[in-house]
Length: 326
Ligand code: SAM
Ligand code: SF4
Image 1 (cartoon, protein in one colour):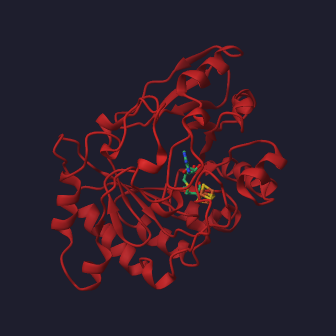
Image 2: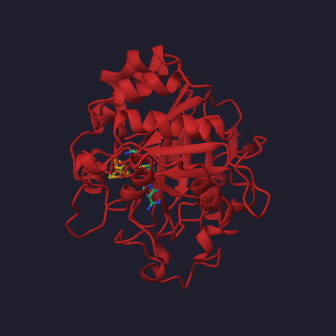
């Protein structure tokens, strides 16, 4: 079991397959020129599988593939197949652009749910946010996944003055469609234009929704980061991920492996442990993993707290989101 000094047990590993992406979402990528990691420095397929097996032996039973965009990696299908053979539930977070190419792989791997990012229902705004004209493809692929019987969660990063006027439209979508909308509070990362006044909080989101709909909370699962709700009579549901205004660190069970093989025990951890280099040198990485987890900070990587109003993002020591693996 991977325990930290606060007694939290970590059974959920998020693996970034690449820091490359076919989108350029401004809230995720640094505004300066960004050099993607060369492929030789990324974990290779067999390295990902071997490291994943090591984590499984240490108690991990849930793995999420993320990135960058995980499905632009050429061997993504083979990686999915191999990881699906491990005793884990396998999940994917994707921008949705390539899902039509992976529909069979996903079904064959026994994947039951998928998280797809879509921050707006407006095509022009989609182009403004992602710098790409791919709204129709993403929307169509969300429908494809629903038709294939997957539980689809749509990730929406809510940013004041950017897309907070669409919250009602997203909840409206849940009326006839079994889609689950996850409103995510905007988080600060290196170079992502974050300012505290752009955060649209959990309470503000609920305030907007309750002016139009009557909704009730759905009971959370133990390590759930999302606060879940449903509107009576709606086929779908919605939730809020309140990382900034009400962090859920006390029940955190997550750890992250970056595409270049560094272990991060928190999304906001300033420290990371290189596993890939010792692994390539034939060394045992189990002790390195245990020490990294043991040193996990109590909350938000020890870098800030829920009083984020005066937070200066330049004082947070971290990578950009695309480089961590969200
Ligand atoms: N490319 C895939 C995607 O977009 O779903 C997977 C990687 S992306 C980094 C994972 C998730 O992180 C996405 O849902 C994205 O919206 C979210 N994300 C990225 N930057 C964020 C930020 N600054 N605040 C909150 N969520 C963010
Ligand atoms: Fe790419 Fe996902 Fe980041 Fe957008 S949020 S730039 S799709 S990794």
